[in-house]
Length: 76
Image 1 (cartoon, rainbow, N blue to C red):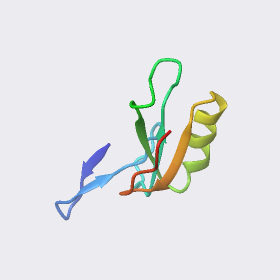
Image 2: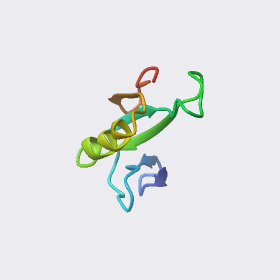
Image 3: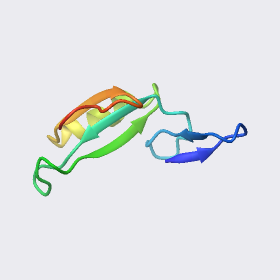
């Protein structure tokens, strides 16, 4: 999600529920039961929620890749 900032630039916020902190991580993932290798979703995370979001996805056996925001986190 992006929000307008006072500087006029979009700010990417964390995907964790209720969090509006600036995201600095991209978490690439997919659900292999319903999506082939060409379909991938990306969540964004602040430093505080990175581990929580990554563990949530990995607990469901979803392929997960993490990288700095603004880079491709890689194929899942």
